[in-house]
Length: 198
Image (cartoon, rainbow, N blue to C red):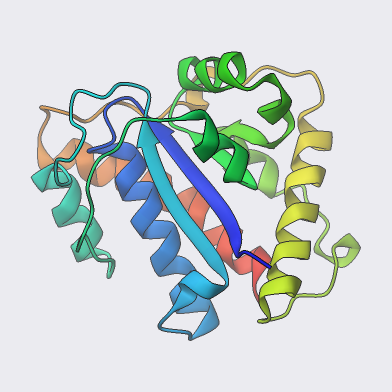
């Protein structure tokens, strides 16, 4: 079975979504004690626009990732394609506008697509006892991840994301803004890793 796959989406794929990609991967590695957390969870990203395709992570974003124990090695920006959405078990967008973009491209992805802040906010309402048992085998992680996504979709219901769920675009702004955005990303990715893995 393929690992549980999380796709992070922002605009240019050089700031917010790569930070989220690499910080979730680090949180999973920390939680599982498995240096190659990729076999349990695949964290990838893409941008709605292709302006930066093939570029490395924006330097202040890369600094934030490294400062938090993650790696920016080998990262290259890419433009979002339909098959990336098809392959993802969970899609996390930086903003509500990007959520709309994803759902316009793949309406059937709506139930597994969330604004990152919305996902983190609703995560607190998930009853861990009602989920499949946590384990460190890929199929156990996949089953528990799928159940978390289903439960968060149920908790969201027909409610739209809230204004505070969006991540600010830090591009061209100072390290302080990147640090705040990094904190907001970890407010969602770390609790997700904790709930997902034993």
